[in-house]
Length: 168
Image (cartoon, rainbow, N blue to C red):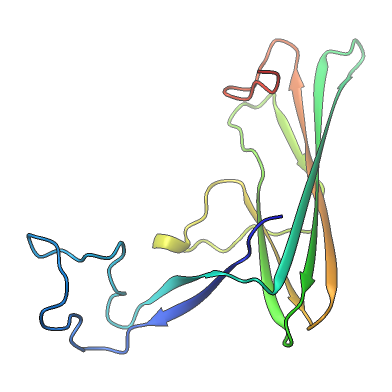
């Protein structure tokens, strides 16, 4: 079971004093925290820790087979099943992120099978890694939902995944 992380946005309202007098600061004048406050008028996403009232179960299944006239293509069929349960007394909006492999090799084909979407390009901390896919859904109080997706990787004979040795 994975932890669901709560997040919220913090908006800078404008010119305000950003530090308390005598607040803990690093030698040399830097902040002690990991992130700087947002720029004036900007928004920064802030993690609020685990959301205990939302249960997430993620199951994956990989099936390897061959295809082609002479079985000259390795087919890696990845399936993802995500179950969500809202145990809170109010509805929530849930965003589930998955990563789909990306390739620059024209011989290797990746076919997606899901109703997920490519996220909007954000800037800074909201920038997503290549291959990120998103499911967004509103989950009413006391309900469950199941999401199914997957992708198929077709690799011709003589090619191999770099850093993807599944047998070691």
